[in-house]
Image (cartoon, rainbow, N blue to C red; front, side, top):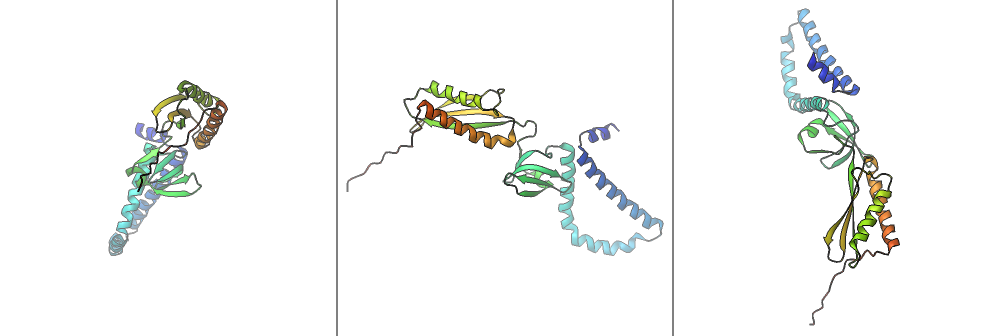
Length: 232
């Protein structure tokens, strides 16, 4: 009883309905077999037909049963849930359904992908929102040599703190990464809890940073290449 209550507590309403439906179906099959036995209809009559059918669909049923068991494990462990942002086998998007045989991932381009549950269980899956919906955004920039690094660091922090989707905890960070071929390299690192808006937030930060650099008169240099011509 304690185990049953713990399992039920770990499932959402949709998962409970799915498990209940499959359990009732299994009970129905068992009752049908019992009815045949009570009616004195020998089960052996179906032995030949059942054997032929088993040979025909055996391999297909292996895959179906594998996905069924994988679906049960996903529903119980809840490592992948509806609303999670995942990446699996090159497909990224939001999980919109988790059923016993397969799950549906709605891509950021609006395309729905049906993913067998065994793939989610056996392959490497990146779940961006498993325990935390925050995401870090990195924005890099290169400025001309001769620019004061502290000025750039202060500017990066000012741009980050001014954006409404940037969290104050963890606080934004501005870093001087080093000396590039033609520029001093800097990076802004911020966190947002609006995972659904992180791409838009990154774009807005880049636009705001460019405008701030222009206003401060800080140059973003073009890559420089030295070309030597040999006579003859």
